[in-house]
Image (cartoon, rainbow, N blue to C red; front, side):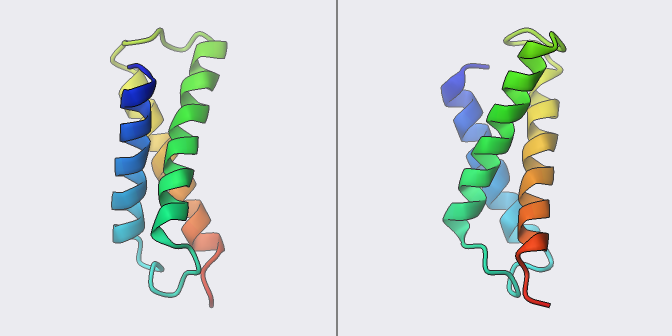
Length: 84
């Protein structure tokens, strides 16, 4: 997966996870923040996986790891910044 695919994956995961999060309406996180956090989460997972040699560029394990890390990053961000 190259950088354009990584950015697209992070943006889509950020959008979907922001939209489906139960605390979205009570949160101060706007859509563009969720998109940025999703892209950053996918990029961090990609770089960390390459550093520890968990996967090489294009391997099957790279997609689910980057997706899961971006999903968790957006969920935690929206959850922590919600008004309770």
